[in-house]
View 1 (tube, helix red, strand yellow):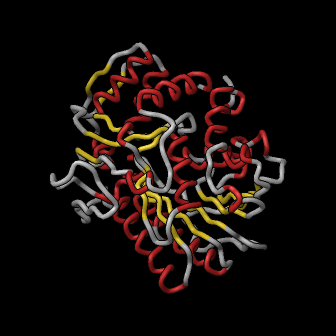
View 2 (view 1 turned 45 degrees about the horizontal axis):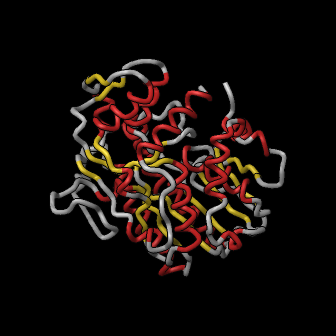
Amino acid sequence: MKRLLQIPEYVEDVRRVANLPLLWEKLRGKTILITGGTGLIGSFLIDVLNAAKLGCTILLLGRSEDKAKTRFVEYWDSDLIRFVKWDAAAPTLPMIDGPIDFVLHLASNTHPVAYATDPIGTITTNVLALNNLLALASEKRAARFLFASSNEIYGENRGDVELFDEKYCGYIDCNTLRAGYPESKRCGEALCQAYIKQRGLDCVIARLTRTYGPTILPTDTKAISQFFNNALRGEDIVLKSEGRQYYSYQYVADSVSGLLTVLLKGETGEAYNIADESGDITLRDLARLIAENAGCKVVFDLPDAVEAAGFSKATKARLDGSKLRELGWSPLYNVESGVKINFDLLRKIR
C-alpha cells in the first residue's frame, strides 16, 4: 500500500490545480487558517498549497495532531503547517498569536451516519463553531473568510427547475432529524451575511456539490463512498434505493479549484455553486459506472433505520455552475474520467 503523495497520478492531480492561472499572489507569504484540513477536500487543498510554493503558513485546526501528522508527514516538519489543537464542538477557540489573513471553514459532518448519530455536533459545527471563527477573523482583521456550504441548502426540488442556481430555495421540512445539516448550513450562510454587515468582514460562500476523491475517509457513509468501498473489496455495489436520484457529482481536484476560485476571485457576500453539468448523473448510472471500472455488478438493498434517517430525500439536485464559470473556472474532469482516476488511485492506497 502506498501513500497518496507517493503516487505520480495523484501528484499530477495536485500540480494541475497548483498550476492553474489563479490569483496566487494574494496568498503568498500569508497565514491561512483551515478547519477540516484532514478531510476529503481540506487535505487535497493543503497538498495544493504545498505544491504551489507560496511561502504561506497554514494554521491547521483539528482534534488530533497524530492524525494530521500522519496525513501530512511528507512536509510536516516544513514551515507550511502549524497545528492548533481544537474541537469544532468546543465553545471557544484557542488563543492564536500573530496575524490571520484568510480563514477557510471546511469542517463539518458531511455523511448520513454522522447526521443521524451526532445531530448536535452537525448543527454546532455549522453554526456555533462558525460564529467563533467569524469572530476570530473579525478580531484579526482577516482579508477574507470562506464558508464551505453545501448543495443541501437548496432542499428538495419543487419540480419547477432543472438546475439550482444560487437564488433557488427548495423545500426542507425543518422539524426532522435530517434537517439539522441543511438548515444549519443555511443559518451559517446568514451568519456570514451578518458579519459582513455588522463587523465589515469580507466573506464568500462556496456551495459544494457531492464530492469524491482518493482523499475520502474510509468511515465516510455517503452513497458514492460506499460504492467505491464495495468495489475496492471486490464486492457487488449495493444501492439502497432504485437509484433514480439525479445529482451533481465532482472529483475533488475540481472542488478544490472551485474553492480557490471563490476565495481569490469571488465577490464579497456572494455564494457560488461549485459544480458542472459534466458531473451530473443518476445514482444508478453512477453505481454502474463504478462497477464497470471494478468488474463487479450492482445489487439493490433497503437501508436500515439509522441509515435512512440520515439520507437526503431529494430526488433531483443538479447545480447550475454558470456563476462560477463567469469567474473563469472550468472543471478538469467529467464524471467518467473522475470516477476512473479515483478508482485507480484508491486501489493503490488501500
